[in-house]
Length: 211
Image 1: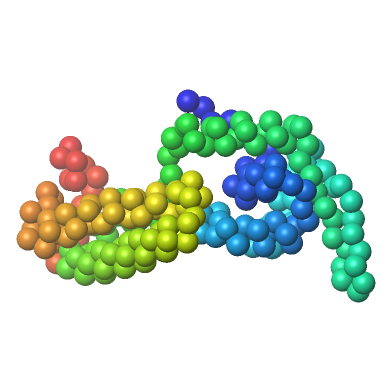
Image 2: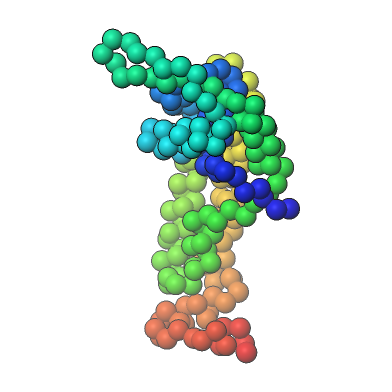
């Protein structure tokens, strides 16, 4: 399925639209609300990019300035509200993100595709380090979820953290299996891999693929 090309595609813009479906806000309140809800764990957030996103959403008619407030010596604050096109865009965009799987180009997948560039023994140590860090991440995530549950936070509002923990568990399972294969030399191509780094001679594509 083809993904819709959006006028504003930054996930932070989707978060802004979501907030403005609740009530009108100024950018500082948007940022404070997102941080209070720990959304910066899932959506990259900084004030500079937030203001740029707000400007872009306004430019495309998805939000509009409602009023500008001035309190004492504090800078003016513009209150923004969502427009009807903005509501439509929010619902359509969120629906697409939920229903349509999209290829994500992750850093670890890129590293795996180039794994042979480092010697097997070095890769083994790095994978063991990654497994340790994943284990720590999973433990910390589980503790945070448990605290949220104890505080009465409904699962609906922490589901993204549960998703991340599930991903980390799956990755840990994969990494641990890979560690075992590299450690005992069972990985297909292992001898070739080691020989290349011992000799310093890298083969051609024809040699690798047997052509």
